[in-house]
Image 1 (cartoon, rainbow, N blue to C red):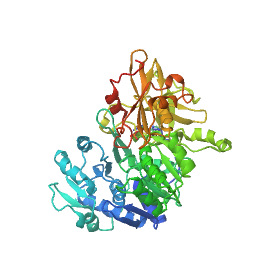
Image 2 (tube, protein in one colour):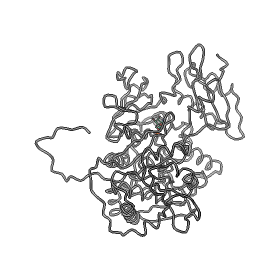
Image 3 (cartoon, helix red, strand yellow):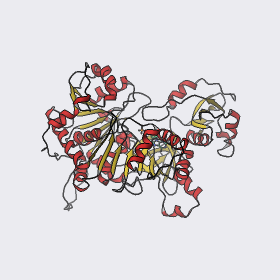
Image 4 (tube, rainbow, N blue to C red):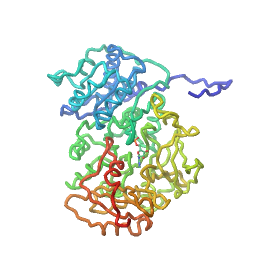
Length: 550
Ligand code: AMP
């Protein structure tokens, strides 16, 4: 913690800590009737208001105290997006304990590692994950009890999970007079482990202050622009960097919240969007693929859906064009990471851009966007020298700000900051107006003859071909150039495209020496726990690939 000097004349403003509980208190008092609608794992739709959510979150906090959970102790969740998960967001953090959201799509051994590393005291889970918990419970040494997020009528009849409790019984039995405690805003509030493609996952430990500031900033018009007139459906899971902060930013904005539960297929999502009048959503490109395909194949249109944020990996331009031009949905391309709570940049246009022709505006919108207040960024070369913001020069991206980690939980990985800046591991350009464009993860960059080739640009070109459903580009060894690009493609069902046609499609769209040396067709691409294509798996699979140019 840095000790800053104190001025002889201090401001005379109320010294109120920025606590997560203040968000739900405000929401319940000022937007008490706003709705939270959830598709439950049990199958039905549940509805209630902010007011009821706050009451139940307080009861939950009371129940946690009854279970002996103390300030700073970790309480884990293995759950989909839904109202009970939201009550845990507020009940756990609001009581001073730390909410640890676990990604259920990780390998069971990784989940057990994370639970033991975090020393979780209790684990709350949706019934979907009962078999996973049964398989894992014995290896989770610190967990004193497991709580099934359902009512008594849905409790498993027979299970050997030790100390199994029922969520609804816990909440119902707790008295309603709990008051949110006040404490230092820098106290830990929530813990998220990085998806970590190599080595063990590392924990980003958010504070109340960082979470509240991030929620404020991300709701602003230049970012996600959430208001009380919105109906928001976060497709991004609450176990992926806290659903990008939406459970906080939506509540402080007063919007109606819609949670999709476990039903994330195109049909279920579309029906919920229409039934509830969703105006705004958020998710990674792979989820939009399913929803867009469903809508286009069935010749449907959205009646209320007008805006979505897409991030987590690069939004392919072809996807952006379909959403904007055919489905009339504005796309906010955003960039961030677990270590940044997660939002760093969001792509919205400046006044001067509105006078540009549509195609030039689109070129801006394809970038990952402009820093939001609170985040500073710079690009540097291998020696750490800052590089110009000219939109062409690319370098290692570094960031800083009050919602960026200063290190990892339990100091895993040691000192991570470089002169006070966090190295993101991304390679990027920044243009004269401050718009960031991500070229690649530094470990995914293809190094051909000492020059870098950005795999994202190549994938974007391939994805614009009508027969291509998904594409990923990796570097494979080459005797002359050290590495050359190999394109791995999944074709749209029922559509054909030959290798030569696909390679010719790159002509004039990228520099000649960037064009991939070969194409392989695959049935699917490996996708990780947060919906991102796993390039490391592709490199394992094609590491020995013999290029025709080799
Ligand atoms: P995670 O912490 O799992 O959310 O991963 C963060 C990483 O995802 C970033 O460092 C980027 O490499 C990548 N990423 C996030 N958003 C984008 C985006 N809009 N375009 C390209 N890459 C992105």
